[in-house]
Length: 397
Picture 1 (tube, rainbow, N blue to C red):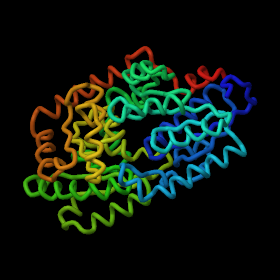
Picture 2: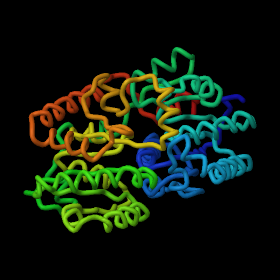
Picture 3: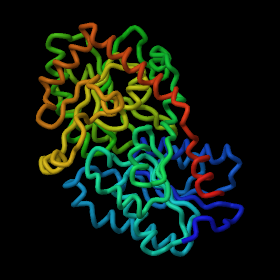
Picture 4: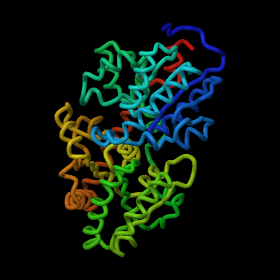
């Protein structure tokens, strides 16, 4: 395939995302292309934020929101059908560029099929898989299937360059978008929360499986915490109607005290930034390990990170992981700044202990200052490139 073939004046750009954080990146990327004066149509799989930018989603984003080695197995048939449906569509009407945002297990398979079939499509992976952390041999599949990797962190570029994989550091748009001093009171006003009341945010994840595994243990911790700290208030963001229904059903099984002290706030606009607003308006956060921890970092909120996987998924993953930390703040800092309660450590007792430690000692303020320093470091790097400009430059469009 000739990467430098001339393209029509109006570009066709395919983008596939699998969850809200990818939808946020996808919407920002579309806006960036428009800011470059690029005339393009955008299609693939996206969420409400991308659709609001004129994106045409061929399948619901929720259909890709599956995580875990074992958990994916029961969804393989539908995932393969979506993958094959996309390829069949693009064989008839190929885009100029295919951009997979995160969701690497799905997106890299789509990119591989594009290469196998020798379709005239340039391929981009936006958000590097954690190939530097585990399953490092995936880099050879990436080298075959991907023409350009857009990396959120500078150390990822160094890894790819060792294998001669084209990669550029684009940072995370939120690092530049979110101010170094986030306004807690403003977020409370937007959420219609009493300004004088303190809140603890509970973010069990954006996927159904994550919520099913993590919210019960979080609520168990809440029940225990309220025995000695009855004044505390908790808030849970619901990013879409499906998660709202799931959270509401789980809250209904709790004690009257927990139901009274825990408030669910549904997403109310196309931006789907309810999780960010809830974190910004809170004094501390208990959240699932994942990209939300980066937002918590950029908001400088003290946090406790938790995660649970299917036992077999965790066992397999533990044999492959090459780094000592799971959460992005700790990975970026190369140090344990925030507590990580993973698998058997993700208990109500441990959540209560770590959370009260953040609320009742100087540790919370110390963590806030450390997270602010990380934020400053991320925006100070002079090698950051705009993702749309990096793609256009790489493919000479």
